[in-house]
Image 1 (spheres, helix red, strand yellow):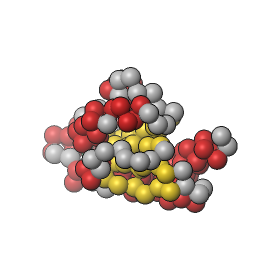
Image 2: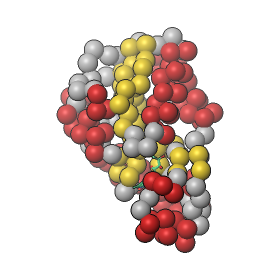
Image 3: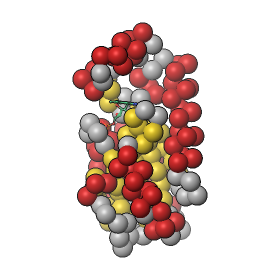
Amino acid sequence: MRIAMVYASADGSTAEIADRIAERLREHGHDASARPVRSVLTVGDVDAVVLGSAVHGRQWLDDATAFVNTNRQALHQRPLWTFSVGMPDALPRPFRKMARTEETGIIDQLGDLQPCGHQLFSGVVKPSQFPLASRVFLRLAGGRYGDFRDWPAIDRWAAAIADHFNLS
Ligand SMILES: Cc1cc2nc3c(=O)[nH]c(=O)nc-3n(C[C@H](O)[C@H](O)[C@H](O)COP(=O)(O)O)c2cc1C
């Protein structure tokens, strides 16, 4: 199957997750390569789409939202998987729960599109990404910095997408 793996990333961690998913899909026999959403004007001649975005301010990056709105019809016509990359695992438990609720809002923004699957991953959280006020807030809230990507979970999600086609 030809699978378009399209992503929006501000600081690179979503890009690396997208590369990893594309690599795993290729290992399962699919034709997939990850491309930044800015370089992809149309969905094109593919059998399925995997679309992911970093989360800023509880929303997908503008590029990803614009891609959804421009390609809504094409996305309706083929299986779609979506993922978000945020920072739930960088936060203490009560805030983590709140971070996960933002997924509901993000899925709502997809409107009438119904992904076959949607996943929230934690990404990389570095002090240099944030303005001073956010760094102070994060410190007071007990947030942590680091690379929170769960590669085995990412691999399992990619394998589930591959299996969707290999088993059907
Ligand atoms: C300005 C800014 C705002 C952010 N807002 C959120 C947010 O609302 N929710 C969340 O879960 N993560 C938030 N994050 C964390 C990022 O989503 C996380 O660092 C992610 O790994 C970024 O992906 P990227 O490296 O592909 O840009 C924010 C990060 C930045 C820099």
